[in-house]
Length: 335
Ligand SMILES: [Zn+2]
Image 1: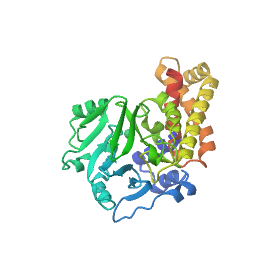
Image 2: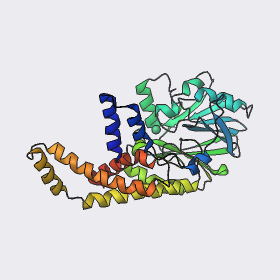
Image 3: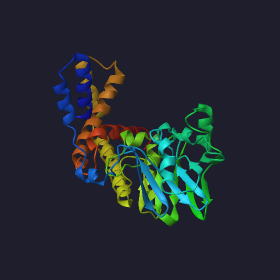
Image 4: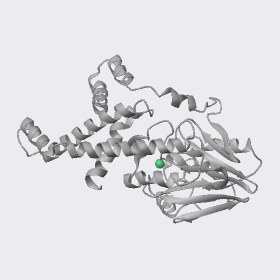
């Protein structure tokens, strides 16, 4: 059954009052998370709600099992990378548990609320340097959101934060959000962070992580792999990744692109128009004729890709149709 059929069925059950068991059976058709992915998940102490681990010399990753952020301890204070809405209030305590150094810098990877909407928890830190892209700062100033503190240092393309003898390289990219994304690299630790790119062990979140630019999303893998890194933080889900995780998601993305491109080229647009017109009694409803064509391409590509990836990356059946539709828009209108 296709994803859209599953959703239609679930939606129907809400309106028609079909039995819960019928709905549960639909949901149970989704593949469980792959054991290899679950084995890598960091255990979260339910009393704390977050897990913090040192992943490289002086570099720590914090996660609540869904979001991820990081902090870097230097001899001249702590640099925090992102302040997720869901647990940022716990970050100062996690830092205090490993160092006496004060927090003095906060870097925003991008403007999205889920990754920086907890920054208000840092409002009491005097002299806090909040670093973001110029475009992100302009957007936040327009939003005037009390949960997202305004940046104090902005940059257009690149910035190197030098603190306590450490270098943290920040570089603008455009793979995800409209206002721009920051790739953060700490050379001595071989640590790379690019939020909302990949989720290790899983396919990306919906529509290649709700990218507003699939072209740049496809390009980002080469950019990432040009860095010399061992630890990768993508901002989700339950554990950080490695170089191999980036390579695997690049392969996944390329396969979706290639498959959708081929299926789109092979699918007979006029044939589907004529067939659909026969069913609805004419060619007047052009939107419906075209929707039918896109649906057929999406269904064919989704079925083929699901089969190839469902045993390789968790969530392949959950989001495949969304990935296919994102690729389809790009292939038909941009490629
Ligand atoms: Zn985001």
